[in-house]
Amino acid sequence: MIVTLRAMMTKELRQIMRDRRTLLILVFVPALFLLLYGYALNFDIKNIDLAVEDQDGSTASRELISAFTNSGYFTYAGAVHAGEELDWLIDTNAARAALVIPAGYGADLARGVPVRVQVVVNGDNANTASAVVGYAGAIVAEAGAQLLALAAGAAGGGAPRPLVTMEPRVWYNPQLRSALFLVPGLIAYITMITAVISTSLAVVREKERGTMEQIRMAPVSPVAFVLGKTIPYSVIAFMSAVLIVLVSMALFGLPQRGPWWLLFLTIGLFLVGAQGQGLLISTVAQNQQVAFQLALLSSFLPTFILSGFIFPITSMPVAVQTITHIVPARYFVAALRAIVLKGTGIHVVWTNLVALVIFASVMLGLSSLRLQREWR
Image (cartoon, rainbow, N blue to C red; front, side, top):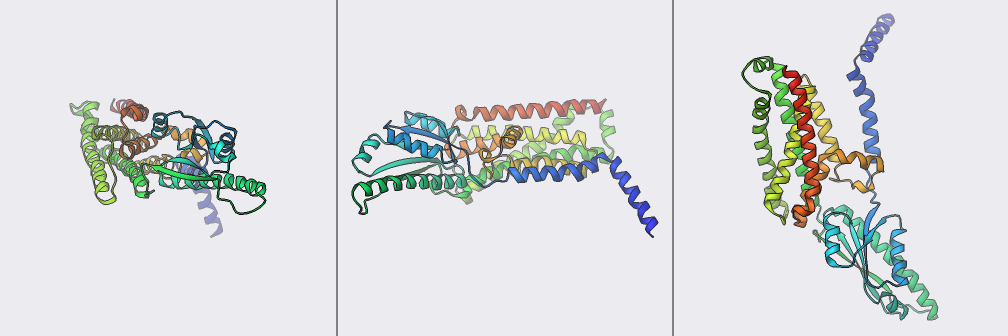
């Protein structure tokens, strides 16, 4: 019994060592999951880009700005001098929040007059916005408490009113409804998975059934084969994505503040890239089981973890943030939230659209090269 068991174990170990694909799955995938979940899944909100509109320019206002930037939560994103500049920074996500200090701030404090500062927060991500409001409120309260202590000491005691208070303004999602920032991410999540999986299985199915050789012998070019396979799925996936948007508007009150043509263009570009990824997987996999696993692994995890769908990218380590630049859902979610919630035009989201075009071109180019090699 022991000898037989040892022989079977030795045989199985040798087979595992020779099967590089199985060995890679057993060793590499768990380590990858550990790194991604350990570093990317972080609910702590840090490195919040803060714009500052200092209308006072006094020593007291600079001290308040320093209190924000030295807190460990906020990063100075630049100064703004007009409302249009602030709109642009918030719309392009160059700043997640803005501190507005009114004129006469320092003089009013010197006279003991209470002052109200304003904190503008980008509300397209409800969780981040709630945390930003909490952080800003705590910093302003601490600054006000220090000034209050000084005023009380100078007055010889008593209980003077708070000298500094905060007025939060949440843009695009004043009620901080989670559905308004979750639904655009869900659209990307559902669309990516369905498009990649359906396209990858469509081509591999021909390999499993043995009909690929017959198609190669038929007067069908690789381009016609690819288009014939993908266009039906493209139409279905596009209609599904639009239906999700319409249902979200009806059930969850999702607004559509931007142009419809830009929304359709963004969805179309994202679908083309996702289907190109599915085609590339179909040229690598030899059966539907492997194609399904590769499609799920390459679409589910990046879209859910590394797109900013739930976990803020700015709170991730720099190495993980670098990886997110190759995740198409990152650009799709950002563009979708800007179009749907902020009502921005193409002049704001064009960089995200260019990234989607580049991704689609790379995926389609690689899949075409591999398919032409197999076609010969």
